Length: 151
Image 1 (cartoon, rainbow, N blue to C red):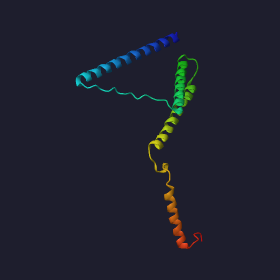
Image 2 (cartoon, one colour):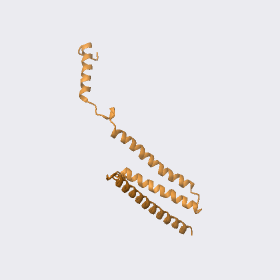
Image 3 (cartoon, rainbow, N blue to C red):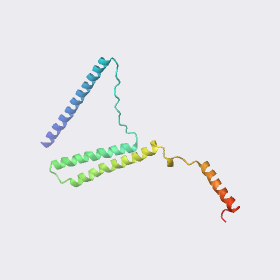
């Protein structure tokens, strides 16, 4: 009985979301056509930025997050059916979700800092200038002490 109620709610939620998304799409289309008729200019569609999963880290993080979210949901479904105490399972799964997400965000932050910014220590050292400065210091110390700088 619970399963039938769950499935009916799930299917009705999917139908509701499909109907509302179609309604919003038609409303936007009507609004765009109205502004085009009023101004006489054709407006550009706003391009929605699509998320690209083009690296291994993004794919792995997405899979871990999807798995963790599914398991947390299932643990609450089990708790709803009064099967077992699932508090420890939920805590473990939430750490499974939060830890990879924080690690991914931290890694991307550091990667973007070095990739997008020009930092003084990230540029290669100009060895010629260092050599000239070293020669000047060495020559000055030779002139003061004679030929032997050490002693």
